[in-house]
Image (cartoon, rainbow, N blue to C red; front, side, top):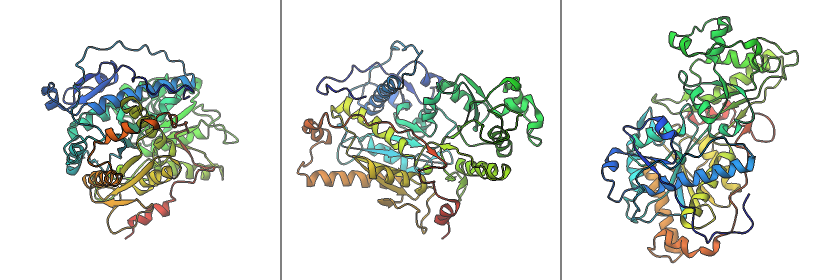
Length: 491
Ligand SMILES: [Mg+2]
């Protein structure tokens, strides 16, 4: 993938014009369609001529599209998307604050920045600090790695821009279901499960899936499928009429948390036990069903309730367990994406490396990435495991605002535990500054230090690809057993 003749001393590709949309008025569609975009709080739209914090969001958008282009070449996926000609927009105002490139932050969202749909107060302060309001006079790049599903990267971008009052681009989000985008060529007809109403069908179609079926479509065709679940008038209206005798479902994607566990479990198991993905058939061997993908494997997550709530990983366990019972001992192999899968962290590293190469002409990822999360089993476990094999340092920070609760022992040990995301940011910045001081760099801006390391360029390609997934059986160690998971909450 990396070309042998390194051209790192050449200028980065010319940056396309970015559209700037207000977080108050932008719609998901505005963000998704029309080319590179950053979503901006209203107050920054009004202060366009002044220096603002736009640089990082825009440059990340650039790096992500370059990375996507590489992936497409690599996989020889035929892209029919015509590149949208640059929409007239205002160019990003150059920033007068240097951006660090030797370290970066990666954040989990639920339980770290947001809880129960509301921002955690310290998160707003933390974002200001990363955007230049700090004693070191620098900005620090950041990305978001979330297992939360059911929303496109574009929607997440609008929500977070509003909630945290930051300028942000969709490229900064890596969702559990992001890698499902890479499977659109592999499967034609897919069942998509989870989320509200038609949302996940829209996400899947937005990813490029050609023929997307929902549980609602199946129930509309045969109401006896789920004896106790009746479709609402709205569901009847939106569900699509099909002749399922002729439809072969090639794969199942659980994009977001199920809203109707009983019905969804029934339909997933019907297909898992079917003859080759045809609804209404029953296999004799129980090994002909379509593959089942989950966007993550978190058993619990931090919502508005005082105690953690059941998540998609719990649904996955139930389906596997029930399949075993119903088939008298056959194992069902399912696949999960998201944290703690190594591929998720690897993708984040490639993205940060591409960004650094474009912006700072250094073809290596930031030396340290501080990952801030609230779930030991996915955030901390994934960061620590990835750190064992990565060239750069992935430094795990656990916060006390989400799943992990004080007075318990985390199942996977972070490098440091702090109260809030603001403490995490302060910890990382202080540590970096102390490191640079020890290195004799004094108070030099971090990107100047990077420029001095010009000779580093050419080391390390933009990492190789590992599938962003975990199989339920095989070599990959299984994500915590129910017993392990319960442990942190028994005090
Ligand atoms: Mg979380």
